[in-house]
Amino acid sequence: MSSPHSPNQNHLLAALPTAEFERLAAHLELVPMPLGEVLYEPGGQLQHAYFPTTAIVSLHYVMESGASAETAGVGNEGVVGISLFMGGNTTPSSAVVQTAGHAYRLESRLLMQEFNRAGLLQRLLLRYTQALITQMTQTAACNRHHSIEQQLCRWLLLTLDRLPSNELVMTHELVASMLGVRREGISEAAGKLQQAGFIRYRRGHITVLERSGLEARVCECYAVVKKELNRLLSDVRYRQGIATVVPDSHLRPSGQPGEIIRQDFAH
Image (cartoon, rainbow, N blue to C red; front, side, top):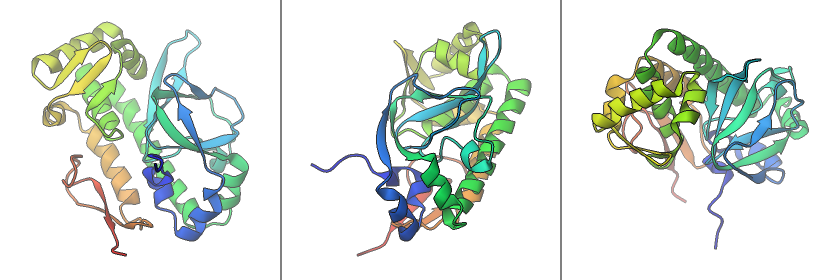
């Protein structure tokens, strides 16, 4: 049986031209990423870059008191370890697996070799970094100015965009930690969304029943993050075909506007 895993499940790896991809392919190591695994800690030297396929990684800052808040999430659209090619090597934040799954791991030395060739990988990584910075700044503004319910809707939608299903394995405590708010605030906001019929919550599982309901209640921050990611990566040519983004919307369901659509070439 063929493996259900492929580097092409990560959008950045899938976007590399054949020659660049083949230089890396033999060195890409498929690794399981269990929930809660710490990929790097504050000040730690990064040894690898991670290209998630089915896992989602949370980048967050931990205060001296032990309280923490997520600054950004990374899924199959990106890479964990931007400090490697940005020149800093270390970071004051942590990277922890938020949703269990898999990723392809690449040694930092090999990543830098390819990055320094100044080919498409370099341009892709720099564009993605700009999109990640947008997500971080928008998260900071959202946490300051918008309600917990709006923040929860934003977080749920961004997480859904990185998953193949509408179900999240997530407790209220973990969501509260991600958003840097009290658990009671998340329980109240989730209760309102459940009462409206948009989600169902049970035993650490959140199932989104009506995505359009979340989109109606979310603040503008979700659209800003999605629009910037699409703007920066929408002209990317995939090995399998052409990546295009239908303009003027940020809906995810397959074939609808705002989704990156891969059109395979006929062989």
